[in-house]
Image 1 (tube, rainbow, N blue to C red):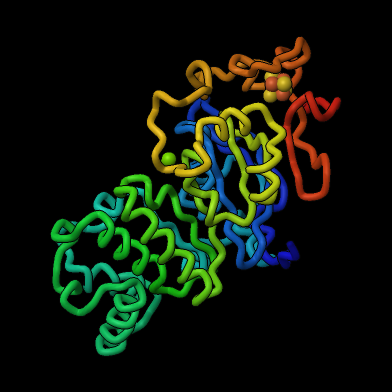
Image 2: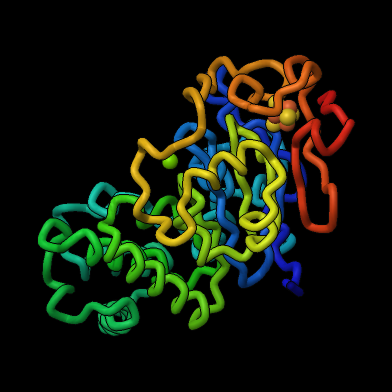
Length: 321
Ligand code: SF4
Ligand code: MG
């Protein structure tokens, strides 16, 4: 892969504390122009929080977010408004994120109004244009979100995110609430839009099956930290971190969407993020746990080119931060 480095979306480290809970604790990664970076982990691992911190919908406790050489964390609210044109969020549940009292036309017009498209005609034209891009039409523009199927609603959510022609889309479990047959339609649409508009995606999901075919690289999170991040082919074929391995073992290769919860081989519950285990946070569930794992937190290191892992099996470096 020769992905061109473009956004260092995050430079260094960022942390976010929610009360005493470190929902995202010291993670660091970059996103390349035009790629899809999958972010995967069980619920409560901090992946949604990470997405929101990147957009500054939540403020980071510390750390840097750099988007096209701009330090997102230092922007004024006016600059942030400008930046929001370029970074948009697609939600898991479009119904909850779309105003039920507004027609689709009004919903899609709103971002244009916020960003100063003053001509009504022009807004109408842009709304119709975007509806057709996502496979809807004028008929849909006069209707309300509850009159749509889940898949159509997600198309509206996608259209809304695209109204300002963003460069980066953070898609937070955009297909998790949809039927399997609809999931692949929406995933295909997202891929098509990526090509058409040269979009970069951060695609958040709770299992590795969903992001497999859409991601160029995948990062796996556990209790607020990245435990492994690398190119998709390496992650799926030669996973290194024991947590990644157990997540993969729960995804049947032939039909990743057909899994049901009983097939999970991952033992035990995820500990509470409010009280993460000492040392390696995964040690309470890890089949390869060693003594050092219970006391020393493994550092997140690049153990071969573009392959980052935080695990004592692969590195003797301890994170003293
Ligand atoms: Fe397992 Fe130890 Fe690696 Fe953590 S550091 S994943 S407990 S082997
Ligand atoms: Mg979430």
